[in-house]
Image (cartoon, rainbow, N blue to C red; front, side):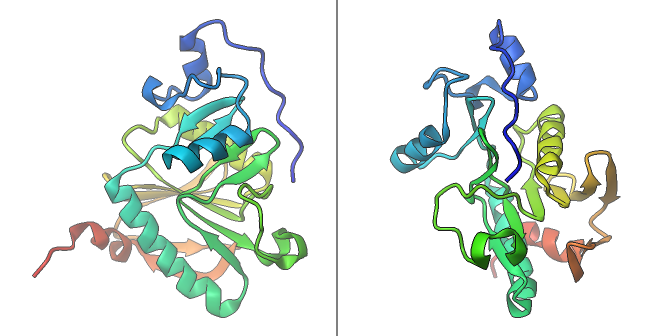
Length: 219
């Protein structure tokens, strides 16, 4: 597990706090416990009692941005990836409630993630609620409340923690930004093909297949 992030000095204003978090809407920031004092125990307690997902950033609980279309795409992509990963026995996949301690004091919850067996202690499924691991692939399905600054921060944190590939999927624009570093991306449209690069060699997905999930209709 990477070393802990150095926690910044407490902000002087609410505006400064929100700016540090990437300009997230105020309704996603929890005030109890007091910002700057939250821990992984608080993340788990709220999930257990309220069934709400919060990420832990700089001692602050930030609610995970979610939505109906985002959940549909996450489930569809997770199923497609599982059909590729499981027969090859190369690792595990997690879904939109799979909490991960990227660094001490930093909990993120990718919508979909792939973790190779080599990254898992003893090459076994973790038996803790927030395992201290970074996935090889992290996927974020963008919600309306996600900001560009928030996602830039997430990208930096993912790669600092050892993530090798990040896909940012926009269900409204029907695009995918595939990052191999915080500054190197390939922008794909719905007519393009997404591949797994060096993380999932041989994986290819026509994005029309994924985004067509949003056009399903009953007979």
